[in-house]
Length: 385
Image (cartoon, rainbow, N blue to C red; front, side, top):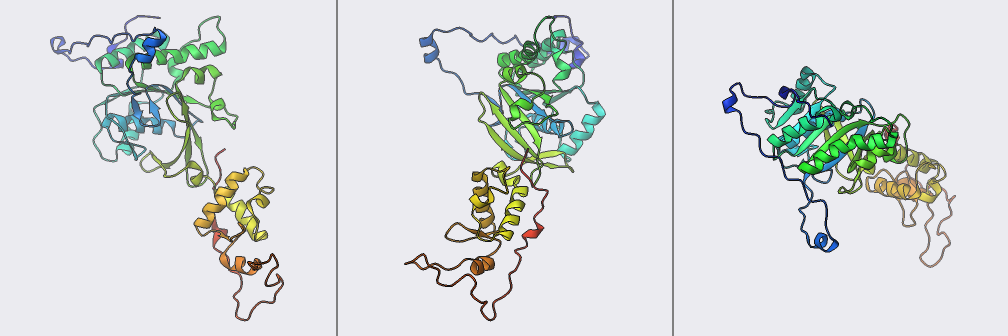
């Protein structure tokens, strides 16, 4: 690893008077790495430190997504929130502390413009250090980041946007997997030594996949070396994106997010992600029920072959709770209450024989079937791919 000096202005400013320059704190002690089994079981370890509780823990986290999905807006917004000690995603309280943000594809003017939107007139936090130029990890980038961390012992997070700018050339004679693993390893050593969250902004493959982990660009060595993987994917429906999260210290979860163009901020939506991304499923269910009043979820499975039966059941139940469908005691669904009353024969409590025949003449004064207004459901809503 190169130890060539890095121009100090890349990562921090030096006072004009050398005599007033603060003394660099001593480097942290190397953590213990060897134990006997009984020693390890008797040891007491602190809980992982969280940059964003439940989402970003200490260690290396990959934040991947397709181009222009909003990864940089999301990561810069998180950097501002953590540096200021505010609310991440406008809803999750975070502990404040210094943040280093390496915006290696941006200019100072673009960063200023984005921060102006995100801050919305609030004062910019002094704890956020923004850098637009840094050498790759193997060419001194590791030492440069370590110098900043030594000067900011209470740092909470380092964001590298984008990871490709820092990984450097692959070592000669190694496989692609090993090269990817080594490249993440540079960030991993920093994260583990300083006990902070390091976020590597990365890309996904062009081809989609049912498993979001396999969408991370590169070999499995990248996701394998990271402690957590977060994939931001576009979604249809009420949500603008779904953040898929999994990791060693992070529970696997999905979060529905809404992007606010006026402020550039990502907001966390309440409830499970599926509550915000089932618009196409609801529309298909409604079409089936209108054509087949009294249908049960298992009857709809043929038409909705891309949706599993459990999702159909949950969606029908939510639509009934919202007044979009009507449900009878037998678990049959109708477009509205009137069609349920007309279409479903009454059954005697003592017999399975209907009290009235299905083709019974319409009673005088009975109103015509009314549409529930669900024809206006936006067919653009859909499940995340």
